[in-house]
Each structure stands twice: as C-alpha cells, then as structure tokens.
Length: 379
Ligand code: FES
Image (tube, rainbow, N blue to C red; front, side):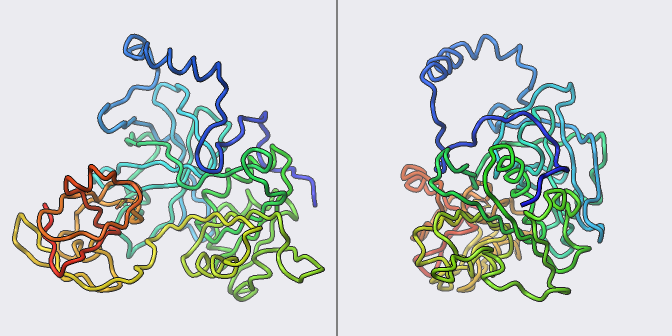
C-alpha cells in the first residue's frame, strides 16, 4: 500500500455513528443534551444558523464555489456555506442533503466533502438530460452567490469504522461513476482512522468519472477501471483480494458500494451466502418493483385515471398525468411523495410511515402499491 499524499489532512474527528445509526453516548453528553433541549427556547434566538422554516427544518445556504469535476463536463460540484460563515450542523460519511431547487423540486444529494470541515458542505450532480429536471436546473441555473434552502443532513448509508461499531477488519469500497459521492468522505474517514482499505472505481470512460484527481491522490489503494478500456469488471475484480485457501473474498471484509442497480444487485446476489462479509450499499435510482401487479390510480381532484404497470411505481405513472408532483428519493424513505389514500386497500412498501400514519391514510407513491385494482389518491 502506498502512502497517501494528496487528500486534505485534518485532525481526527469523532467516530461515525454506530452501524445502525446509534451514537455511542457519553453519559455526561446525554445529560448535557437534556439540559440544552430544556434551554433551547431561550438560546435559539442567539443561534448563528437560522432555521428559515421551523416546521420543515429548512436552512438557507449560499453557493460559494462551483467546479466542473469530470472531464466530460457533465458533473458539477457545489460548495455551500452559511451566508454569515457560521458553522454548519455536523454530519458523517454517507449523509445527504435535501436540496430545494428554485422550481420547488426537492432532490437528495450525498455530501462529498470533508466531514471535518464544519463550515462548508459539498455536493456533486451529474447532468441527466432525460431525468426529472433537477440536475438540469442545478447545472443551468444555479451560480455562485445564489441562495438555496436545504434540509438535513440525514444519513441513510451510515459508515461504521472497524472498531467503532463494525467487526470487519478490512474495507473494500466499490464506486461507479457519480456513485463516488457518498464514498469520498468515507475514504477521508477510513484514512484518518488508519483503516485497512482499498477501492475500485469504475465508469464508462475516464472522461466520465468525477473527482478522478482527488481519488488518485490515494495512490495504489485505488484502482480505476473503465468499461471502454478494461471491459466490465468481474466480481473478483470488484471485491479485490481473494483468500488463497478458498479462492473467494476473505472473511472480515466490509463492502461499501454505490452505483447502478445491476452492479448492486450482482454484489447482493454474489454475497448472499457470505454472512461473514458486510455489504452496505446505496442506490441513486428506484429499486426494481418486486411482485408487482397492475392497478389503477384515480386522482381525486380531477377524476383522471392512470394505469400503473406491474413493473413501475405509482409515482412514475402519476407523473405522466401530473409532471410536477413532488418526489425526491424514490425509495420510500424521505416522505416527499406522501399523499392520502382515500379509497382502496393499500400495499405499503415504505420504511418510514408509522402505523398511525398508515391508519390515517398516508401513502408513499414511489414504492407503495394497491392491493385492490383501484386506488383513489388525494391528488
Ligand atoms: S420520494 Fe422519497 S419517499 Fe417517495
């Protein structure tokens, strides 16, 4: 392994949260937290970060830097800061921001800067001309000096450092294209904590992969492999070192991967019989629909009906009739697409609604389906 020379150095920060999102609580901090909450109404007016909308938990940040970070010019990185330079809420690798765009669209973007930097957040966005419009808006409309509201940070892809919530001894990072964004801060953190790690970074071509110079600074811990030059990587190439005794990936490995669904599904299938290997992954696109059957959604406000195919989400079908309907994660965990189901039996497939919310009719269009042939939604 080579010595790292390029990435920014900073003093070790706190260990990331527990694998399941829990903090290792210090009893003194716990008591302090209770006292701080009790005093919050009194010292909130003095807080340097102003919540612009207490109900939604939104803060407004300013774009202080904009960089094109892929040679094909299709990925732009934005650096955000509080307008008055105040410190920002802490975050850990794997966290993302909900960014509210000028059009009102909300989109989630992984934080890809240095978690030890308390004054700026960095996100990166690939231009997707045939997507939902969010990336085009960021590329074409947002400039340095603009203000944008954000919510978060929140973390749906927590990184557990070996010895701090993970029994693994070695980490293998597998990033594909823009999937490098949540992985970058994990590299910073793994390096700071002296973790034994390596990474394979794949993409269509060298020109298409963002932050190439940032990752090559880690020397031979990082292997870059592109489809046009090297072909599609084998599972052995993705997982790196093999155990000479078994010819398979070694025990004690933790794999963190972000990329397209076929890559993640292949990894999941390949490691299905390996309980000795941790697999953590984050997808940027909706999961495939499993065991779907077609049904019809009626939009209550207009009476219009849309047919939902067996292999598509209700959200996709509704967007054909209502292109501006709000959504963000498309994976059932952010709540942006929540509506009320008025008629019909629901097949809930989300991970966030409580029993009480479901009983009150809440329904997430991006993942949930209808048990009946017809559902009427409050849209
Ligand atoms: S879009 Fe996030 S829960 Fe549906």
